[in-house]
Amino acid sequence: MKSNDLYSTAHLFVAAVRVLEHREGAPPAIESVCRLLDYSDEKGSYLLNRFKEQGIVDTVISGFNDRIVVGNHLAIEELPRDTEESRLEQELKKFKKGKDVMKEKVASIKAQHDQKKQDLFAEIEKKLKQKMDKK
Image (tube, rainbow, N blue to C red; front, side):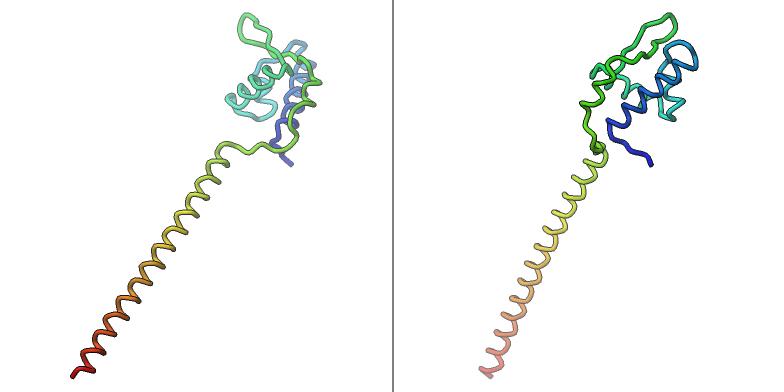
């Protein structure tokens, strides 16, 4: 079961940092954490920055690359536990809503057009009957 809520992801991220720190005997680099969690480097960097803002993790600048250390792990409890809706999903819902509105407009215009057509045929038929009655 893969959950994508920020709360679970933060726990997983901190656990990966701790495991790698135990294995390597030194704070891990973001690349190691991403490899362990099977995240892309972009997603790992995004999560690192987000967790740094919350104070959950911090980075230590070393000679070659930055290393990650656990900061205030209790700050994880302040994170929302519900799943976040991705921006793509939000845009998709917005698009679908717009498409539904457009379908309703098209149906309304079509109904008006059909009504006008019926009225026109009724008027033509009425005029023809009047001409026929005159003869």
